[in-house]
Length: 155
Image (cartoon, rainbow, N blue to C red; front, side, top):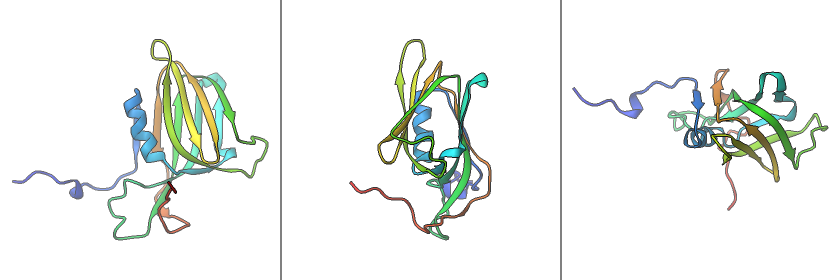
């Protein structure tokens, strides 16, 4: 009998949670370069929930050598949100397409703090949270990335 190998695992939709800054970095790496219309970003104040429906690049795709790069629609959600602020984006422009570069956490007292969603083009969304409670869940089947290539960043 031999040990299981990573390559033997089946590919499945992501459904991840984050309860601390380390977990949040995992979600950040998997959500990097997701794109979404500004209209798919919602804050439900009464539920203390901020959520986005994003088109996520499948960085974790083990089969990318066998097929074109893929994206998948995912819900990126944050709970215990007390306040939302943004800078560098025109929230009135309903045709605006945003690209997420990273998610970070600025700690405050007793587990509270700010989650910062850094966007391409010097934009950012800052969530004041009681605690880190984030989820990333794929909600559609993967599809071929319209660009047919992986995102890249100039240094």
